[in-house]
Length: 263
Picture 1 (tube, one colour):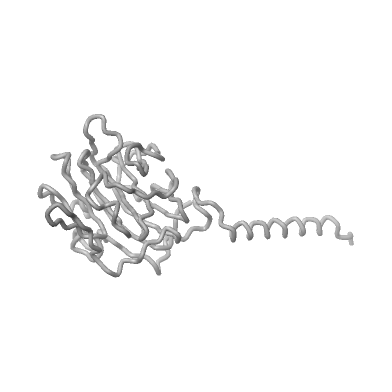
Picture 2: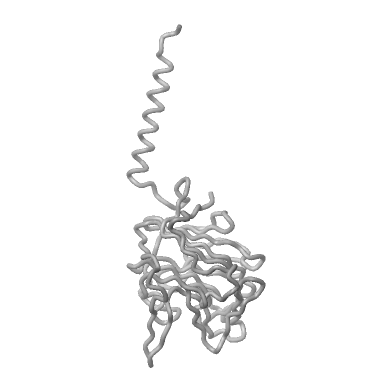
């Protein structure tokens, strides 16, 4: 079951075919510490924070600014569609995690993180190790849902769908994991990251982990269309009504065929 994005509502946040870095395009900005640069590599964008575990470097729909001890995130493009978890949200991105490491005994952080929050701060934090993809629990202490997957072998197209309170993650069309949406009340990553409505962040956001990654196309669709409900989604009342109507029709039709007088 492969999600099919509706072209009419598609927003390409990063188009690697343009041969320009994401921050040189319209939708994503880049924030990094310690002077870490994003580089064009083989038609994609590469970032390397492995030289300094405490460093951060990533791309987001918001620009990060600091003023003394305070930090804020401001939308880079005011025309970004409003994200609402009560509706369907779809995000796809190409990623190869070339290297990933964490401080000793740290199992609740990762060198690459996706944060996707709607306008009411409901959303997900999905983390990537070299061999596991996992969702952060709302307490930031332990991995919640997780799946074994080699993220370092090849450039992979990941798709994330949010459907009426839950989420699902696919890799190259194969479903990996799903679970409930969460609200993150405290920031264990970059300051203000979990408290910014409508936020999409992709990159190294942890001071306890590092990575070297290759990022390709990033696309957003406020409505991700599928031919059938995703594995995690619960049937809506309308869907149940349609199923019940179809079942009743099938039973009646079968009864009619069985009792129809022969010719």
